[in-house]
Length: 86
Image 1 (spheres, helix red, strand yellow):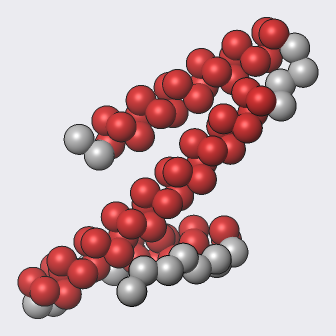
Image 2 (tube, helix red, strand yellow):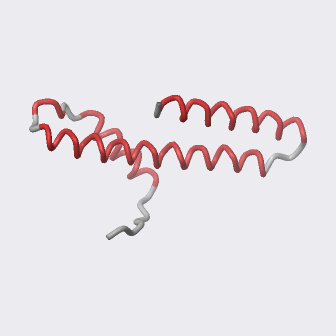
Image 3 (cartoon, rainbow, N blue to C red):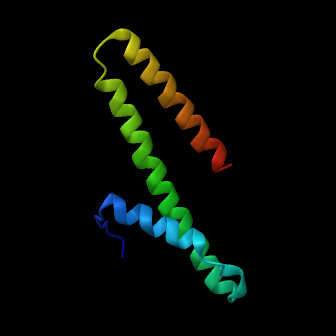
């Protein structure tokens, strides 16, 4: 069963922070795998939301110079995300 759930952004960021603070390596390997899957999914969602906001900056730019600058930031952000998941 696959369905989407909406949660407030501050709660997503708080959950990521909390998960990153847990020393998971003292637990059973199956728990570690589940932990890594959840944290990875949350991080991917955060990255996706940040990339979408970066793209919105391009669309909402007031002039050509700011649009160009926003596009460069978007492309760099996209490259950084891609490299993080390689």
